[in-house]
Length: 123
Image (cartoon, rainbow, N blue to C red):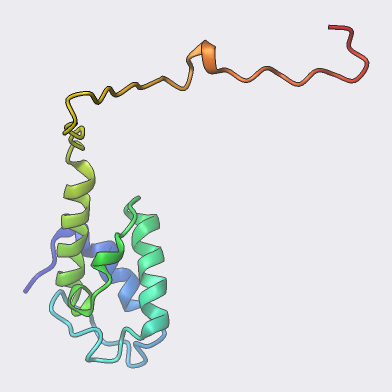
């Protein structure tokens, strides 16, 4: 199994793991947990690397061993999370016919906070 070009930063990071004592080459199908390359600390460091490198937040439901078995399963998880993040969020459909949704923009002047007055100000 070969890794896609988008997996190369992941493979490079995994190659430098302190648990890779033999300096073995890591391929897309390398067993990471069973091979002793990913322990609990390394998984936390990996998640931090993934979130920073790929500008995403991994949902808690993705924290299962199956997603961290090989670089290929990690890459599949990344693609799944990226796809979910890229999909437009559907607006909730009101179920109550009397429901009215009101949205305000952050820059709406009606809701701007007044600047605090300086001490000794007469206004």
